[in-house]
Length: 198
Figure 1 (tube, helix red, strand yellow):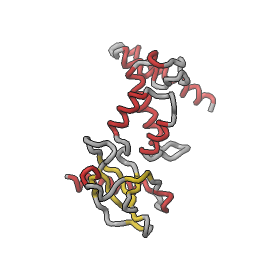
Figure 2 (cartoon, rainbow, N blue to C red):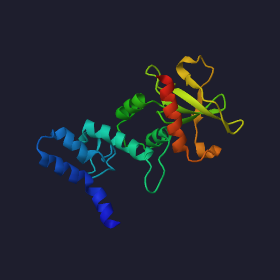
Figure 3 (tube, helix red, strand yellow):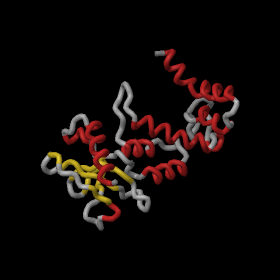
Figure 4 (cartoon, one colour):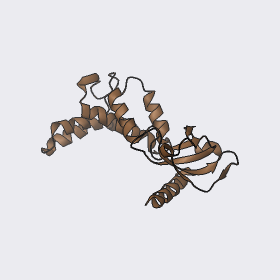
């Protein structure tokens, strides 16, 4: 375990050194390997850099890397729902560049693809696409009725174009509604939604 922690802690420096040995890697790219665990408030590693001492590309990589780590299942934990990961990152005050974080959220949406949301119609839905004109109102595919506690016939809803007939009222954890092994169901819903959109 100690050896593993040391390698984990040193991976930024090792990666940077390997990229430097490669010779053809621009330094601003190699610096991303070195600085992607630095945090704006100086709490990161390997050098405890603060603010503008961290390159812009590295500040961008820090947001992407943290998001990826939170949504990806690991050996000790299950991955978070994408929207929950965004909320957690927003609560990490002082860690990320606010402009980079805002641009990231605008790019992937306030409710990223793959998020499970609860609708005003008392249904659960999977976010299957973003609306480029309004990142707060994605396209969703319904799959579960909260009122009956049963799966429902899927309906695709472009929330930005449904004229208020439905809306997102919050995030939802499928397990809280008794839906087991949701990862397989998420893949089926998303695949069906992609086929329906073509």
